[in-house]
Structures are given as C-alpha cells and as structure tokens.
Length: 214
Image 1: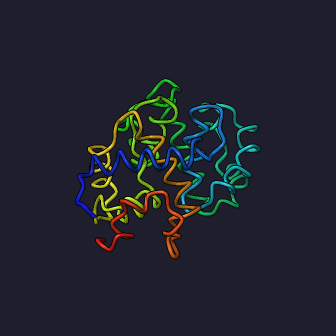
Image 2: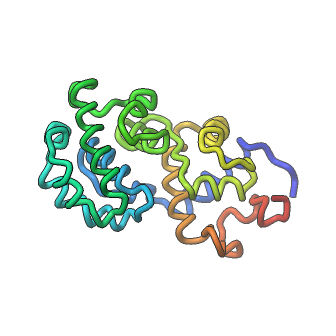
Image 3: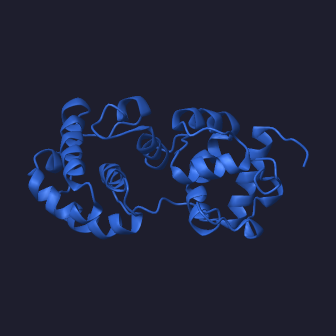
C-alpha cells in the first residue's frame, strides 16, 4: 500500500465512516449541558446503556447545577449506585456542580481549559462538552479512538493528550466531533478490541493493521 499522510488518511476515514454511520450522535441521553457533563462522569468504567437507565430518576430529582450543588451526597450515591465507583462519582458530581455555581455563574463552561478545572473532569469529557454542547471542534480520545486510530496507522501511542494533538492536526475541524462519535459506533460493531472484523471494515483499504504495516 502506498504510504499516505495522516491528513489524507483522516479524510478517507471521515468519508468511509460517514457512509457507514450517517447518524453521528452521542449515545448518552441528556437535555441540558450539565446533564451531559454528569452523564459522562457516570460513564467512566460503565456502559452508556447503564448510565441512560440511571439518569432519568437522577435528573428528575435534581434539575439544575444549583440543585446538584446542594444535594445530599448519600442520596446521589443511592441514585447512581449501579454505575459503579458511585462514592467517588457522587462526590465529584456535587463538587463540580458547586464549582460551576461559584466559579462560572451556574453555566457549564465552554472551554477545555475551564472544564478541566472541575472536579472529576478530564480532557475526554471536556472535549465532548465543547463539541456536543457548544459546537466547537473537538477530539474525544476514548478507548475506541485510541485503539482504532492506532490500528489505522495514525500513531503508536497510548498517551491520550498526544493522540488528541495528532488527530486535531489530521482532521478537518468541522468533522472531528462527529468522527469521534462514529469511531465509538465502529469500535462497538466492527473494530472491537479482541476480535476485529477486518473483512467487514469500511476502512480496510487504508488501514495499516489490515495491510500488514502496523
């Protein structure tokens, strides 16, 4: 296979995934910015499906960042217990909500730098918020993104910050957020961690793993 640049490979990947997964949306269900922030915190080491089962009752009981900031941590723990790591997550949810109210006037901030000052929030979640809520270019580096972009030949790293920079440089900013959502869908359906279905992959023609170069 002819060696291609990261930008060329990214353009091919964007086009292939667009055709395969025309609807690119976050699988977490939310209505308000703070709800996506909380749902994403809950999703750590937990499936999105489980989070979506838990959040309706949680968001019915606590309707705003102000409500969460004043919440009883043990009550939040009770509502989110099935998501795992519930004590740490409950503490982070209440604390981040307090920080939003005290430092940002009750509004979820719209930059990665500000979002990562919140309790329990890293760059992955911050990118999701700025991309999905505020419509800014974003690269959400989750396990699917790390695995698939490595197999495709963009990098050989496990460092999420380094991978984010590599993919920001490679991707059209207007496509980056939807591209990451499509990687999740592709990672679940085809490019799985243990037994990738390479013969079925829409990106096999330019994938270094499939072509014996990775």
